[in-house]
Image 1 (tube, helix red, strand yellow):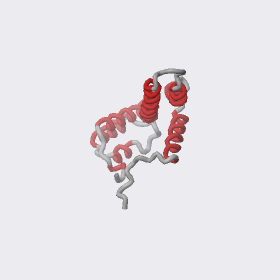
Image 2 (cartoon, rainbow, N blue to C red; image 1 turned 90 degrees about the vertical axis):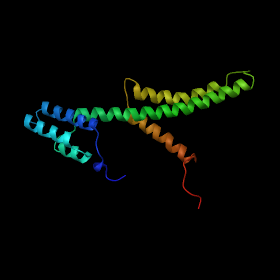
Image 3 (tube, rainbow, N blue to C red; image 1 turned 120 degrees about the horizontal axis):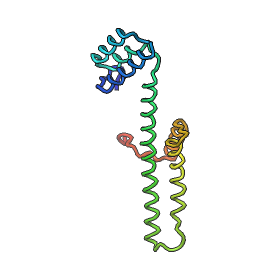
Length: 162
């Protein structure tokens, strides 16, 4: 992939910029003439660089900050769901083994369930709870990912054997 500023933009990108420009106009940073001119340029723009030029002299708007935070939260939510899927599969296998062995004695899969899902529940609370902290959740997910890589769980194709 080349320069990201040369990527073509979608109508949603144009609409987002128009919302940001209106926010700046309400704050008094743009006159109505400047607003109209920039909105026209936004609708004529074809690449990401075209849109970036229109807001280069403006501070970051609260709309773009809100959007960036919601996108990041969505990425973290997807990563948590992926990890939860793996944990649930492991727990289901353990319960299946316990059932196949006759389901006698104590329910030992509870230990596996507790250790695998408690970590995910803690991170989900950090992400969706009242004191949401995306940085902490991201750091924990990244640390777990790096530990898995360090243990040698690399199942990606590395190329031809020679």
